[in-house]
Length: 236
Image 1 (cartoon, rainbow, N blue to C red):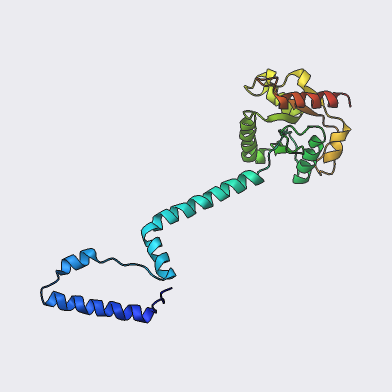
Image 2: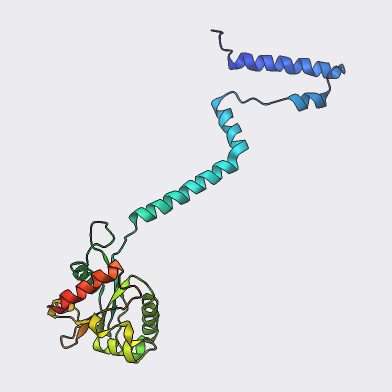
């Protein structure tokens, strides 16, 4: 096996070749333009090879790294995203704290089944409730807009309303009364009142209802599961 040349010997031989070529150019035996044309820089060390590769492919490397970062973020987002089985909207003319909202979510999860097959029932609770006061006008307008958008969502099936808010939906808006058919409305028992009675503004005399929105496809599995919840609560 031939002995590998040292870096010093390689540099010395290169210097000798350069000196010979210089003499040939001075004597007119070698065209400088031709020498420049044929000259090639051959990377020898690992560092030189890496630098040479990056020099020629840097934009491909940058593009590949950016694509990998974006892909990893998208995959992580999809893996960790909560997939709710249904959405319940609180639309009462009263105050609900974050603690109340969480309690309502757990209460509904006790009735609504796991329809998306991820091993557990998960209910998203959207709080659109507010206290009817003149000073709350900006907040009320915001909640009304939020409610309108939820009414357009396929999975936003359940709405908890009190008598005032239910009357407003039926008589004070352009929304069709058929959006909440009478058979899809059930008066909530004391079981629900227990969830929110720790609220300072809680009124034990207020009647609250769980309302199931009518849908275009009654055969939808989520809607059929929601109907069973209504029927179960009617027995209480």
